[in-house]
Each structure stands twice: as C-alpha cells, then as structure tokens.
Image 1 (cartoon, rainbow, N blue to C red):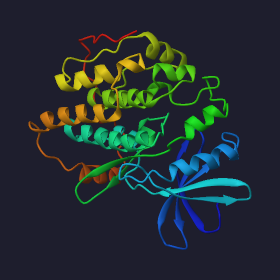
Image 2 (image 1 turned 45 degrees about the vertical axis):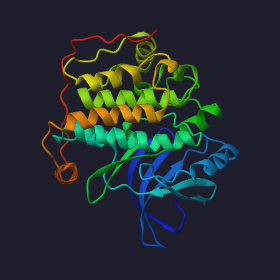
Image 3 (image 1 turned 90 degrees about the vertical axis):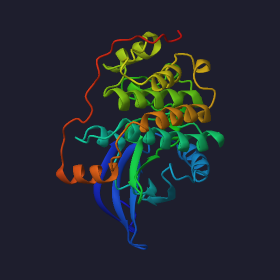
Length: 303
C-alpha cells in the first residue's frame, strides 16, 4: 500500500530491489515514479546514509530523487517520471535510428556518470533498464537512475539470485564486479557493453550467469570491423579486463565518444528520434530494431 498522498496508476517496472509504479502526487498534481524497495535488501541505516548522497545528484542526465515516503514500515523512493520508458524498451522496439543518435544517448549517460563520479558516487549497476528516456523540445534525452542501490545491497550482503553475495546484472558487469570489487572503471565497462549493444545490435557476451562471468573474466571481445574505427577504439579501451587499462576517467571516455560521434554524424541523415519513439510506443510494436553485424575481427583485450 502506497502512502495516501500518492495514487498508484500502474506498474511500470520491476527490478532486483523493488517494484516501480507510475503514480499521481495528489498534492501537486504531478506524475511521479514511485519505487517500493524490498526491505530485506538494504538495512535502514545504510538506506538513510545513501539518500544523503543521492540528494546531491542534480543533473539533466540523472533522474532526480524528490523525496522518501513511508507507509506502515514500507519505504518508497519518489522520483521524476520519465515518459519515454527505458533504454531496454527502446532496444526492443522497431525503430530505425542512426548510430549518431545512439551515441548521443551514451554521451548523456556519461555526462550523468561524470557528475556522480566527481562526487565520489559509483553506480554499480549500469544497464539499459537503469537508463530512462525523456523528451525535450529538441530530442530524446537519456537519464541514469538507481544510483547506489546495488552497491548498498552488496555492502549489506544481499543474496542475489545465481551469483552468491554479489548484486548487479551479469551481462553488463565488469570482471572485478564478480569478486565484489568496484570502482568508477566498473561503471565505464558497463557503459562499454551498452555501447557495443547499440553499435552492433547484440551484447558482446550471452549465456547463463556462470557463462557470462567466465566470458567477462577471460574471453576476448570480438568487435566487428564494420564498426567505425574511432568507435572500435572506444570499445577496445572501455572493455579491457583490467580496470587500470580502461579510461582513466569518465571525462576521458566522454571526450572519446563525443569525438567518434562528431565524425559519424557528419555522414548521416538527420532523424527525429523523439517522434520515432513516440510513434513506435503508440503502435506497441515488439520487434527488435537492431540487427547484429557479423563479427570478423578480434580486438585484443588485456588479461
């Protein structure tokens, strides 16, 4: 049961640590996202400590935490509502959008992470489901959500299904994350996996959690030669096995992606992703948008 101030409209998502609803704030008339957190996952002491950090994350590419709500011992995060859904939903829609537009979404994510990392906050669970989309008059904007929740649960010893005491999403986890270690470089690796998926049409590794762990730890990433050279260079650096071999900072990776995007966009027609996304959502099309490219080149990855 949600606090009386909020009228739940519908469930819009469910993650490892709770259910997300769209809700109406009956005092302000504002549409919000209400996340009911699993009480078993994060002790109250850690939860309250983290909120002090999350409240500082005020950035156009980060979903703003508005307040905390309680009801009969249950805890809710009240956040901005993003009408464009998640990046995962965009990946699953039949939308033909340019590589330049996909890179702009990665640039958005890196800008949000840059600010968080400067404040000493590591996300620990970057994945398409934690990247929300919203519309501006100019374009579709990507915004990162769920900062710190996975890290808090890991510190509290939350038992994630299939991966012992670690938390996170195996398909996007950096090698060190499988040993419950993390740093800013772990977030950049996850962004690299998403960038690969946006550029190629599939993730670099697939399989069950154990297979994914083995692949991230020891298997070289096969980057198709059809991927533009500057983008291949970004992927090769971001997806290095050892954290110290990746980008030295979020700013460095951001600049590299911006350079690649500037070169790629010059040769592309201009498309309105905002309109395409709105139209596709209204048509409720479930087909996959991005077809995979055939891998034909192995990029060496440090072991």
